Length: 458
Image (cartoon, rainbow, N blue to C red; front, side):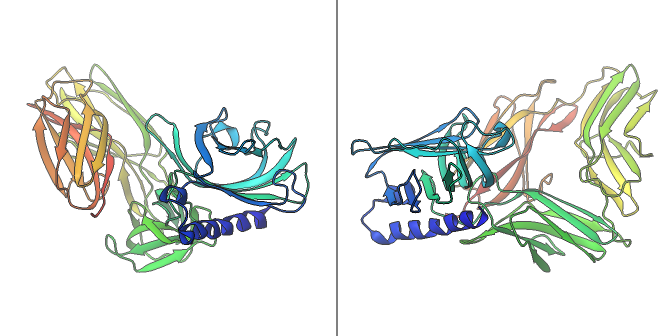
């Protein structure tokens, strides 16, 4: 099956190149095409090679019952029609990647992908196969608006295969989009890097990990040998490094992921990641806090609790704690406090958890965090919109933009509390990490969710 997938992938470039060079197909056909290459003895394709474009009929996309994607093609000639169904295991949404060991949709096992290609009165009773989702796009309502896939299908366990490529409202192949959620754990000089595949765009066939001693710099680079979004390295030295990862496919090197800062102590071990699921309750003057293990964990010796009078500050208390993810304190003085937890080990103290604000004694306090921050980009015009915080009455909003998550080193803007949106024109090309805080007479409150805003070069 693996050889079949590689063969089907190679056919993508051949088919698309033929479309571009032929010149007889309109621009829309360069991104919408069904190509079927049937081996002799294959019942579905009858051993023929056939290609359909919008000039030959109508294509449509829809979500199917297993959270996958269905494609239908109805030709302008009588009796010409084709149906294609793709579904991921366990009814999860279809995403870019390789789906091996497919069974006939919709009768596949819960742990197996679903696949079905039928047309013109011929379909499989049972089938085996594989498919690769190269590109899939969903709109704000969750409806599928674009798809690119290759597939290999065998009917009734037979050897002859139907190979194919389907593209509907999909771009020509391009380098992969940026991977997401890069993390690193280093213990005794052995590093484990993991990340997630790009959620949209063309898939990566391998990855390149880049590390430098300054933001955006590359001192060393390492490539994976396959599509697995992980890499292990040994002999990693102590130091402070900035790390990012990129996908690679036939079209070249893709965009870089968000960069992470990696600190490695003299013993070759990195501090733990941020603790998760931090929660706090106040009863009278008693504070109770809980949290979950950091991600990534690595080596863990204990925690540090920070309390401040403003977001990000630790001017009230810095308390070393044991390895139990629990803290209780009686007799908290009246006031409002901003709390966060960090994990520690022999390499040092790791990044902070999400921040909480508590109010003791009913004193005036800053507003809560604005909700549901979103961004739209049109050329160099950026529009932000959010909803008001659930607690407190803002007098204004503070918009922060940084070059990396959590930073506000690029811009800070204040807007009236009468509006929960802001528009910025002529924003320079770049990648911005943006959040909003509500402000009143007591000060600035917690940050909203953070959004990444990408302004492309004209």
